[in-house]
Length: 349
Ligand code: ATP
Ligand code: MG
Ligand code: MG
Image 1 (cartoon, helix red, strand yellow):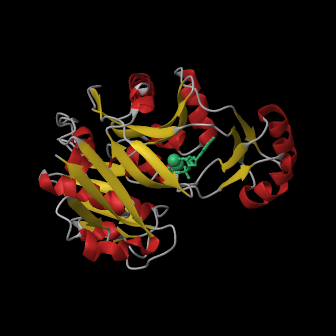
Image 2 (cartoon, protein in one colour):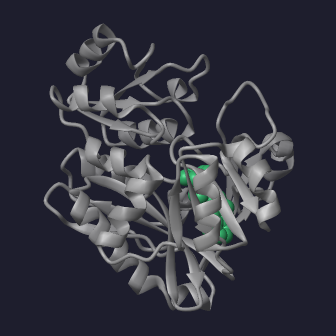
Image 3 (cartoon, rainbow, N blue to C red):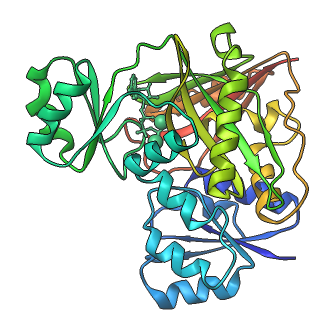
């Protein structure tokens, strides 16, 4: 059996490792975190910093292929690894997806439509950007944001100082999109260029964090599915992406508005574990290991995935007693506000 290396030790790495084990692969996780929940499903784990070349060389020597579960890792070590062992998705996917400016430019080049945006490096440039983009708007840190962290809403230009204080630069200013629904395309591309994607869930957020994903999606999303899936496919092809790629969209009045991409398995795809013929995690493993991709069809009439954020995981005794509820707890020792502690998926057959 071959060994899959996973950079990052969070719940996504944990679920990739579980899918890999089912297909007979060993997994080796490299993560700097004190607590790595992926350790509970991975075959082995190295707890160390990515920037140490002795650590990286040892990791490369142990793995036949390397993947990552988090886009907010330094691209330098990933490039270093890619010179020694196959890394999927490639460092190029990582570099584009971890930088909001590079990401929006890239998507525009392949015909996608993000909200009006401007790069902002200084407080003075924020004023210039507000003059062209207008309000309401959202200021987002260019790199290292997730779960709505590193963002500030700007209702009027009076909020500019506070937003700059909270986010600073480098950042992007985006026009606020008056959407009715959000959705995502979870796509998987194999090394031979074969592409398949899942039906889009309706994603509802609370405080910038995914709250619930529901399928089938309501009409406004269903009507934009084809266009969004085609755009996501063009992005994957242009990147030469291998593995799962997720793009988030707003259902706008004139078609899908691109929000952001993640070069990895995604929270809005957790429903696929029980709700699809092949899970996003298994399909990611299949893609990066050169196996044929699995069927992405939905196996229920209705699927609903709800995140358990912060103290919500305490509901587990009630949830585990519900016959239609598939409970997932990530095994995190420390509960924090806004932290993803688990999720529950319900299927209506
Ligand atoms: P993730 O954890 O998905 O990576 P993130 O921190 O990168 O999140 P975004 O996806 O950029 O954050 O934004 C989080 C949420 O905030 C979006 O899903 C959406 O609900 C809202 N949002 C972000 N940008 C805009 C916008 N331009 N207009 C309206 N709402 C927005
Ligand atoms: Mg993001
Ligand atoms: Mg997002």
